[in-house]
Length: 521
Image (cartoon, rainbow, N blue to C red; front, side, top):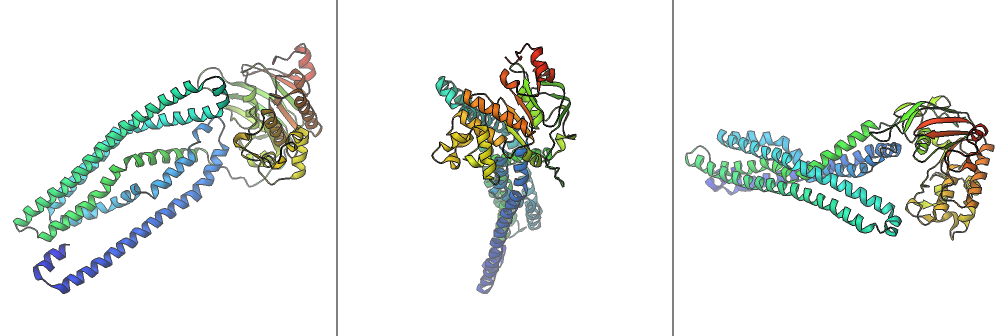
C-alpha cells in the first residue's frame, strides 16, 4: 500500500503497478499457506493431546477413590474444552500476540510519534482486558458453581425417579432446579453483560484509535514529515497490532473456561499418577490384615472407622455385623481398596494394598455393592466383567448365584442387552447377576455388601449355598449382613459399633456371647 501511494500514483508507471501486484499476490498466497499450516498444526497438537492425555485420564478416573468420584465426572468435558480452545479463534489471537512488537517497530520506523500512539493504544486495550477479567471473574465463577449444582441435582433426580414420582417430589424438585437455574442465569447475565460492555468499549476504542491515527498521520503529512502512503501503512499495521488484544477480550469467556479446565485437568493428572508395575504377583493366598486403620468420610464429627486392627486368615469367612451407620460398608470398602484409609495400612498377604496393582489383583477379587451396579451391555458381558467371555465360567457363576434360571427365562437369555445401570431387570435379578459377576472364575477374595438385601426366601437360600461354595473352594470371604442366620455361616464374626471394633472372634463364641442375637438386629 505504501509503494502504491508513494510510487505508482506519483510516477503513473503501470509496470511498477503490475510488479507490485504480483509481489502482493505472492505474499498473500504465502500468508494463506502459513495460516493453513498453522491451523493444521494446532489440530495435530489437539489430536496429540487427546492421544497422550486421554489414556491417563481414563486410568485416573477409573482408579479414583470413590470418595472423590464427583470431582472427576467432568474430566472428559474439561479435556474437550482445552482441545476446542487450542483449535479455536482465542488461540489464534494468542499466537498473534508475539507479532505485536514487530508491528510496533514497523510503525515507529514510519514515524516515532506514530509508534508512541500505537504503544499507548496497546497499553489501553491491555488494561481493558485486565479489567474485563477482574469484573467478570466472580460472575462466571458463580455461574459455573450454579451450573454444577444444577447438573448434580438433575443427575440425582434421574437416579431416584421412581421415588420422586411415587412420593410427589417432582414439583419440589422442579422448584429447586428452577431456583438454581435462576442463580445460574443471573450470574451469567451479570458476567456476560459486563463482558459485552468491555468488548464494546474495546471495539469502539479500536475504531476510534485508527481514525485518530489517520488524522494524526494526515497532520504529519501536511508538515511534510511522512507521505500519504505511510498514513495508510500505519493504519493497517495498527489494526494488525490491536487485533489480537481485541480478539482476546471478545473471547474472554472461552479463555476463562480454558483456564478453569486446564487447572482441573492438571490437578487430576498430577495427583493421580498411574503407577507402572513390571511384575504380576499372581493369585493371592487371601490373608488380610488391617493395622490401625482409620477413615473419615466427613470433614467434621467422629471418625467413620476408628483404629481398626484385624487379621483374616486365607480361606476364612468373616461376617461384619452392627447397627445401621456403624461403618460396616465403609470397612468393607477399605478392605476392598475402594476407600483409602486416612491412616493405617491394609495388607494382602503381607503387601500394602495401596502399592499393589489393582488391575492385576482385581482378576482375583469379587465384589458386590448394595446397589448391584451393572452396566449397559449384554448380561454375559456383565458377568464376565467385560473381558473375554469364558462361557463355562459364566454359566457356573450364574448357576451358583441363582441367576441362571432368571437369565434363561428372558427372551434373549445371556445375550439380553441391559440398559444403563442394568435397567430392564428387577432389583432381585440385578443382585443375582451382580453375585455371579463377583464369583466369576472363583476369585481368591470375595467382598459382599448386604448380599441378601431385597431378595426373597428362595434367593436367600441361593446366597446360603453360594457362601458354602466359597468356603469349600477356600476363598477368603468378607460380607456385611443384618441377617443372623447368614452371619452364622461365617467362620468369624466382627461386631462394629460407631466405627469401632467391639468384638471379633469365632462365630460360635460370638453367637454365644450375644445370646444368639447379633447386634445387627
